[in-house]
Every structure is written in C-alpha cells, then in structure tokens.
Length: 251
Image (cartoon, rainbow, N blue to C red; front, side, top):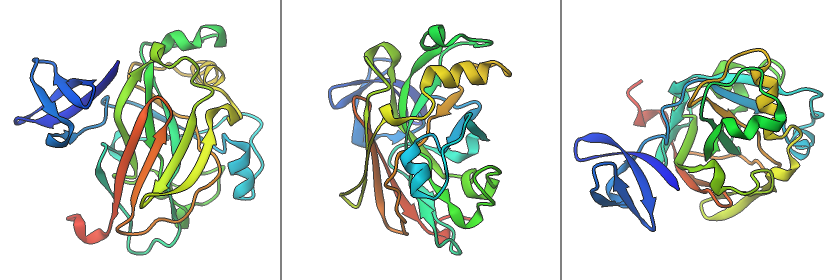
C-alpha cells in the first residue's frame, strides 16, 4: 500500500493511493492534481549517509568510508512532492541526490541486522539537494550545505515495507527537465539497510518516523533556477521538485 499526507478541503489528511486517485481517511476520493502534497510522514530525526555509494565517492574524488558517515537534518529541511526548493543567489554548485529513504516504524535500540527490517515501516523517495559552495568537507558537513529550508524533497508517498521485496536491488534515476542524468541501483550501497539500522541503534534509540537517507549513486550534475528535477525509485514512485530563486521566498 502507498500512504500519503495531503492538504485539501482546508485540512491535512492521511490518504491511500488507489490507482491514480487518493482516498482520504474519511473516505472521500480526490485527484492527485487537486491536493498539495505534504511529506508522507511527519519526520522526526533525519539521518543522512554521506558517500554510501563507492561510485559517487569516486566521482567527487573521495574514497568510500570504512564506517557509516552520518549527519543529521532537522524537519525544517523537508518539503513535499511537487514543491519548490530554494537556490540561493550566491550558489554556484547545487546538485540533486536521488536517495532511498527508510522510514522507521517503531522504537529500535541495539537491533541485530538479522531483525533490522522488522523495524522498518516503509520506503519513500528523497532528493537530498546539496549546495557544495558551503561545504567544509565531507567529514564535517556544513549545515548551510545540507540543512537549509526546502532543500530535501520527500515523497510523494511511502510504500509499506512488505510491498518492496528487495530494497537492496532497486533502480534509482534522476531526470532534469525530462533528460535522464542519474542511473544507479541500491545494490551498490557500501553499507546496506540492515547494517545502518544496526549501527545507528547501537548508540542511540531510533523512533517511529525517524528517516534514514541512504546515499546517492554517481551522476550528480548542477541544477539551476527554473529546473524541474524528478527523482524516481523502482517500485516506489517519482518525486518532483522545481528550483526557484530567493525572490520566491519572503526571507
């Protein structure tokens, strides 16, 4: 099942995706084009993996890490499907990053990798934009590079864990203005999902609706104001965002 959160009829509603329609929790059926898409869950702590695909690490002249390279995002960074992401006027190096996002379903502490998937609620698509102008280095990620408001589109929905047979063998693709730019597979992760859950839960408690962004493969290129970026993951969905400039925002 695909689960969404949408704004319509003056409120925010939980919804299920049925064919090309949305069924709200109260039973009403609406078109996908008649809603504002929220993030599929209200994100708590967001864990972000750096350099978790060896080909991407090589692409930007870094070697893959020997243990997970993790940093955090706040919920301010996320924005829903078909939303707008701000590109600051002084930015010259802004890249998309198509990533499989793992949504935690229940409290997890000291989890063994053999049981890790039982703590997963589902999977969604993330676009972990980065503004590399502000990056100190990949081992001390600068907040301004990765944690800016609207910099992380998430959605459109999440898919139940059991509906994805093998999350470690999914195609990831990114299109910029309709042109394919990135094409990879989750099978190329350095640290797989069970490893990440085991690692993170070994020193901190994970909670429902925490989200793990699992990294991106090679193929990142610059994006500019006006670009429409679509990140898609096999079996999950396609997430669209539009790059806008400072003048669109009030501050």
